[in-house]
Length: 597
Ligand code: M6R
Image 1 (cartoon, rainbow, N blue to C red):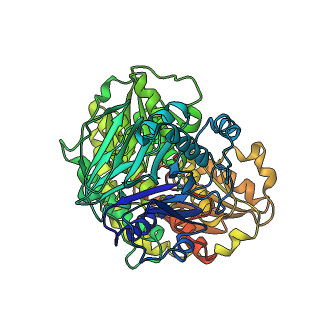
Image 2 (spheres, rainbow, N blue to C red):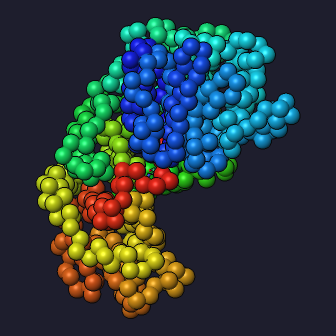
Image 3 (cartoon, rainbow, N blue to C red):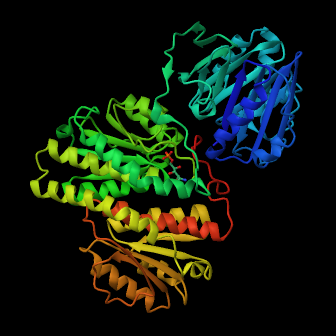
């Protein structure tokens, strides 16, 4: 979602650092962008709707100034036009904001009564106006921030410039990530270390209700009116930036990263003493909480635990979990899954669980992310930077981690048998054997044009195949804009089958031999009503079904099967999006890191 960058340092670097930082934050998803620079007690703001290129076209790269802030905005309050883009400027204060000010109406009313005129529809401008009003009265920016924080309700990460102070950027944070980058003779602020990690590996993580100030060579953080000592973190090698290399887009490259990521992941977690394992014998229940594809990975995790460990698992969307009574106790382990570790709903739930003293575990990719700091146990996905908005390697590594956790869980409970271990070792060997051939094989789907002939495509499957259908359908929707929907195979006839007509594409996923025959019957039901059926099943299954097309996947055993079965659908979505000439890595309206609820 929205991205923040700020820089104070060398005059010939400011504009470059800001624009490059915004470029680095592009992957989060945005629909307008802007920068503001401060010189001679005057702030210049340039902002544009659309992609960064529109902004760059209006910025003089030779602009000399030592201090500035920048923003990419993903619209919440007000459309994605130039007025609503950040930075917002009111009086002496110019700021960029991530988050949502929930009591904006009340504050806006008060400010309007004091004759403040608003130029945009945003909650962010209201926040800036409030900061300015308080600053005008007290003349001290840190005090103004402290007072503002007491008045606003909601979430915010803010970087601001004050016309009276040419040497500092001020910051404040609650519920939206914000970091300070500590350089030599220069300082950075950003919502994500990707924005400055080419310049410095040292950073300070701000926590909720902290605020502060950065200058060229010093930074200070405060809480409740007092200076607060913070630790300097150092970026590790695994957080290095990723490049597209020979690929035309990140999504394609990230699909090709999957075998390498998974092989390193298994290697890492199979070594003893590399991670802190909970006492898995003490829990009576698991709850999995996540959003989007991370939720879908959790569905695979749930299927693993129910079918293999025969252990009860509940799974919830974080956006629902947060509004329901917490039916978890000290014997429950709550597993949060998130690539970014910054998804607002997931973070909210993790905070709630922490307050209740219930054990929590995170499956997360971004090192030191908010989620990783909120939970008792962390399993890093070790997938490297994922830049395409549509997750592929992130999802696959989450699924792999559920298998790793299942194995540790069952080992701790002494129910991981020798035959399961043999299946595990064999499955893993086969997975890496088949990956290269599969990557090649699923680069072409001669029937792609069928997907556009009808208003809707369906995915059906049972159990783990249904979990995979959910992800396959989401992938197709998010990058191709084709309408699709996933159903448990047996559910279609309870209503939705009325939508099936001649030519409707139905993808049936049936790799689980226990339910294969049943899914086959459901497939026949839709076929009888004219559907164009594309069946995904194991290569060694006898082809006695009358499917129109087949996606055959190698049989690598039930433990590892999901990691290979999802591959054709990840590649299919990429190829359809390419054939439509779409921006594969930045689908419209989407954000990589969803930091608002
Ligand atoms: O960073 P998270 O894993 O918490 O993100 C959750 C979802 O927003 C994310 O998986 C989303 O569904 C992706 N666009 C899927 O490709």
